[in-house]
Amino acid sequence: MVAVSKINRKLVFAILSYSLSLPFSTLALAEFDRGKALYDNHCKSCHENWVHTREKSKINTVDELRRRVAGWSIHSGLKWGNGEIDDVTDYLNRHYYQLTAAP
Image (cartoon, rainbow, N blue to C red; front, top):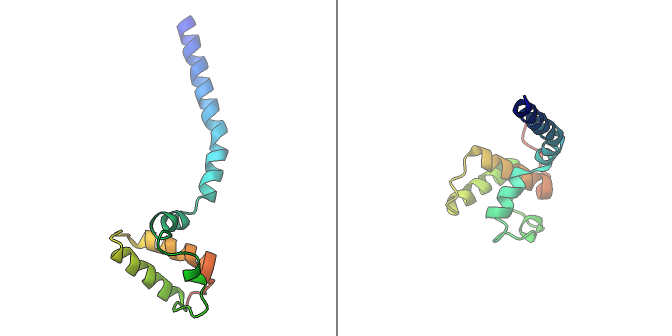
């Protein structure tokens, strides 16, 4: 009977610990920006902030920005899929360009 009691306490403790950690893990996921992480890890070493904020930007639409991100992912050998390209495009647009998508 003693062994079962110890197992039950450990099980209750494990479940309680897990359930208490859920709100914190959800908050961490909500704050995680995949586009920023991809950009910081794969692009930022060559592209400083000024590249995105120069006066005579060649990027005037979200589609142009997406094509540029896709092109650089190929040039860099990253083999990104649509998800990664979309996430980085979204991050750059929110953080630097503030372009509106074509209707």
